Length: 441
Image (tube, rainbow, N blue to C red):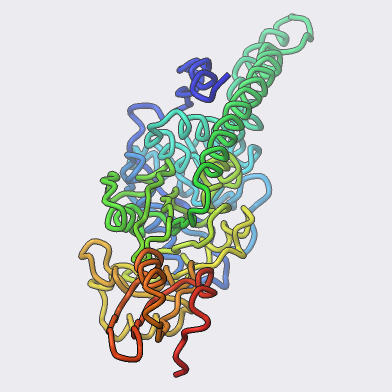
């Protein structure tokens, strides 16, 4: 059975269904726990990122609340008085939702809802909702659905609690003490969800195997992968380098599917460039695990182009977050080039400073097509270990000169009485061809 056939066998409603926010729930407050060591600037940036996530999910934020404490309350995440204050404000302003800027445990979410009568969702739910809305291919839908099911599984008890409450009141009026309908339904739902998880994992394994076959068919092509924080400009750079025409949008997680294209290098060496899903701080671990087929492009790469939006004041933090995710998928040892994007939006002195601060870095503007030649030159140096060689070849080596035109980049070629003077940029793998003709510098 081929990959496409297996994907088609999964019912569409299985892939696409998701416990989405109710249509009317479009306004929210954000609540965040702030450790004592966190600066005001970091707190502000974190809240702003959560606001942008909410905006991408179609939710309007009407205000935010923070509580400074080092550890969450085990049962309700926040303290009781803090939640009572938020509840009062939500009633007064008729806000639909409370968004917690963290992932709540099933117990915390259930207790906040039951005790304070607040409709609460967490950061993970917002991210999953965005991924759900942006998934276009069957592969992306499968990966998102898997993450959704893994998130829902430990939280089923709350969904059916009302049946047991109704059952309990009936028992109080003289009914028998049998197991509640809610409890039975939870067991049924858990079996169904585990079955779906197994089916989707099998389908994703098919996708992974198909991609592995494609990679083997690329032969000796070098593999380059663009990674970076969400909305750093990955798809824009991908389009500039490959003329791929990939959709570019100024929103978080616009790209969920990995796209690969041939990249033309000046030496003519075969290379394939891949775009990937963007990373973000506190990216849900089950989402990273679900996107293993897509993230495999990064794990299998010979070189990573780590794109950074240097117009964002938190760019250093974003670099650390991306490297953390790369480490979690086993890609931390792959060589990187730090691509400092959006140089047109910052002072030139900052570009110079950051280029020195980050090892193997180059400043560009993908949108303005600035610095691309310098980037490609660095790519070839890192990927092919290219060097500039100055050669003196006898006239009997005309065939070698022709060969150098094919595999290298000739920068100078002079025919003189004593031989052919050639300056050529050549990869380390081909340098054995010219060892006898190198002019010592």
